[in-house]
Image (tube, rainbow, N blue to C red; front, side):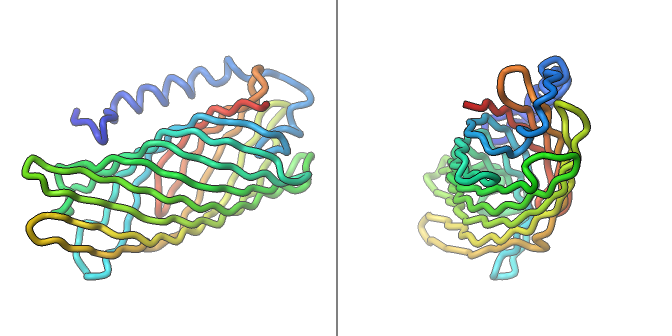
Length: 240
């Protein structure tokens, strides 16, 4: 199978499947777990892997706005209040567009940097409410064998809300919805250069997330999302 941005889809799927299958073995039946389940008032760092399909709309009306995104990164979380914490996240990203002339068979790669803020109310209880906002900047580029360069860069803002139901002393399920705003540019540099602006089309999505508290002072979080974007994300978090 052809790799996407240096990451084989089959290998990524097998890795995610293995990690999810092993998750129950890492979960600790800690009766004090409920107060620390996502996001919790504690500082933490996490490692995360995400795969998303995103549909954008080009301002010039051209086709090919389906982006396949792969992200691998880390995030650092710090509590900034009794029920709120902020995070800085960064990592590597890859892009594939099958039907876009400027990026077909090019698969740009690059990086991203973002900020997130999450709050949870009340801090403890069987049913809680979560709300958050985030911002992320992404840039990816690639040159072909002729030296022609393609650059994609965009800003993503997101607002989200969810209900969190505690399933036991070390597990919870989160059901929510999100709205995104995207503004970016596709730049093609060759003998004749061009820039095409794009934004998001139908920017609403819904997500289901499972949180498992581990015996190592952290959590495993698996999220599946439908809408725009749609995809899956897994994060391994350690509290400090």
